Image (cartoon, rainbow, N blue to C red; front, side, top):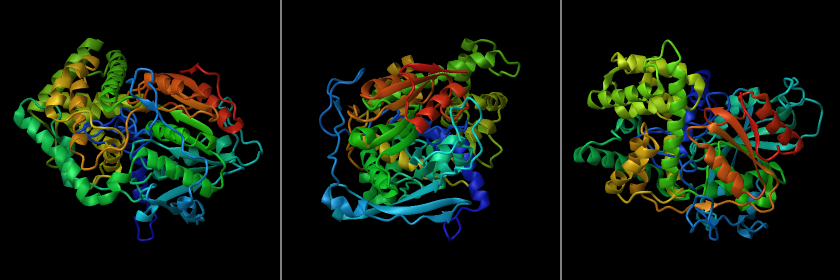
Length: 575
């Protein structure tokens, strides 16, 4: 960043690369507490930026876990009977918060054609006198003269009144909505761009919004390489030490902010921005963890919820253990799709059947566990955790499958470079060894939103067989990944809950049938919880669906955003 706060060309290029690769990581992060892995910035490699992924490190809250639930919920489908519904906040703005809702936004040119601003929110909404946080937002103003959208997309550039602001969130938690908007705005549907200002708000603790930090680049390298399939007590001790080091680094470097980064608080921040933008209702498209944030907003402010699309939905009724286990099954489903596709290709390095592919992957992981592979990146070697993360990264989008085949072939020949690059992309690691704020924010939000699934390593070890039954390929890793929140320095403020959002306008929930990071069942569950939920299905591979240029699905979403008419509940699209 230059001194004036604008990104130079090279940093913008690196940001774009993270959005198409590492952004995928955001999705996994949405799960809920992996310990040795990492996560990456939101956005899907397909242009429909995913949100939230984190292979071997910390799983995000939302995919697997849920945020704090205010009192009063009832049992959700598949959830514990103690789960209660998220209760709405009073419609009137409390007097103690009036000054925050009365701010004036000062938009200034920034980042090569966009407009940036910042505003204040209370660190603690219950104690606003305790101090403020500064949040950053970006917008791409509506472009009424933008060229007409391609036929069949459902968009239109025909003249029409401005509909307000459309807030976008790529997921995570930890994905930068500012970077996301700057990465996708110019390619967004023409009709939507003509009628809405596209706005990205970095949630509290993320990106440019009072970001949290935990470890330097060298220690993050060690964290991402930590063995998450311990074979003996010494390896268990090393994994626990890595989790404790990460948590302690966050405590030392981030201070009081760690206790105020929950999804409930981030949703309240969205409402402040809605008011400052001059919109009576919040129009919103959220992906992956962004669906959890959006659903939380709808639950807290149903009367202020406008046209809302939740793509790659998470189920807030799940506790972190059930969420992590279910997500492991999602990656297993995605792996099976990759293996079937690979077996039909001449360059497949894993055999000619799905079973052979699974066996060879397991053998590769075991070999790398015993003897990390050399790479072309200086002294860095590929660990088993990074190899697993590299494979997980490629599950987010089928256009990464050719790259994964090449990386696996290289690893089989003793070169771990390809898988290490995939792992680095997942975490957003830069060539200079630095890491973005994504993983730090991811863990901070997740560990607040849900209680830790394990009291210690013995609990994790006992959970491994159940995880492995759900996912022979990734279950063991994802069971041990959930340890980090066990040692978190701040007590959780959230619990599993359902979201009814009674009285809200129709909310479109999009689910992809073979989504690895946010399993399709989660979209079904969320759509069923929401009183006005409409389920829109994409029958395909990869994480999230809107923005892939499927005329059926994109058309249904665009017509809803532009005309307010939601698709028929249960509508299905696909290639």
